[in-house]
Length: 261
Image (cartoon, helix red, strand yellow):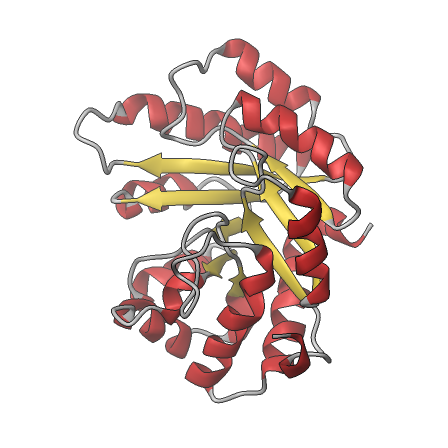
């Protein structure tokens, strides 16, 4: 892959590079660097993954963190969870709060609990002037209604709604996260979103180990595949891949103030 993109530097703005999923994180980081991945943001989902992230960002120079509690991982969530989160937001390489949000996909979902925890974490983001990484599945209306008056900025990760909703989130100051789904054969909706919104509002992401882009879907996703996603965006928008790398990286730096440090 590298020879096609040797001028470009990319940022993976959303991944879950944990030991649970990867036997050799050293190799994952090595492969990412080989394919011109300049920085990788890893996002927490629960207390276990958040604690691991603190260790990983100290070990690897290209890793940065967002810490948070995912809407489907709230069984053990309590007041101490929020206290722990607040205590760890001051680390130089903790650059945001996430993965947080709403997920109404499952029948037994406690929507009120999800909304309450989402709002608690948004309040911390506002207090510490940090961006948020938002998960929204089957809940786009409630997600928007909570964010429209929240007074925070962030990224709608793995965006899956319409062009119209993308523009509404952009008006609130949010970026649209585009990952491997854009390469899938049935991804007409996301292709339309990419085609119709300005590149200045797009972030590249993998959601590794999930959603590996074509033609590598049989493999576990890694940050090294970010250039494949960028290439697809360049084709959809009929622009040079180096422009995709430059603009999306600048977008990440604008959103995550601490990413330049």
